[in-house]
Length: 79
Image 1 (cartoon, rainbow, N blue to C red):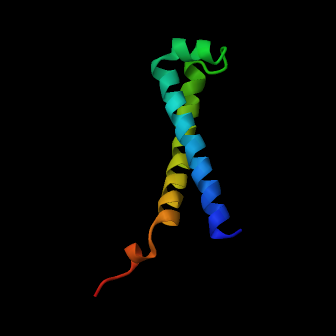
Image 2: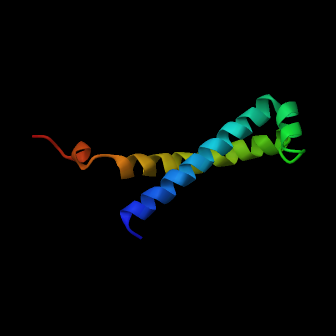
């Protein structure tokens, strides 16, 4: 897999996990509204579990995103 395809996969996966984190956070604080909007699929307990389980993949994808989009000159040692 070349770098371009890998960076696209990482970027889209980061977007999905960012949206999941935001929606699950809203599901914890505004659980009555989110439960109605998701037709009962995302209640407060499920939102809390989802929010707790998405932060590690989110951080891994964020680091991968930064490393893939960083300019090569940022990591060179200056003398």
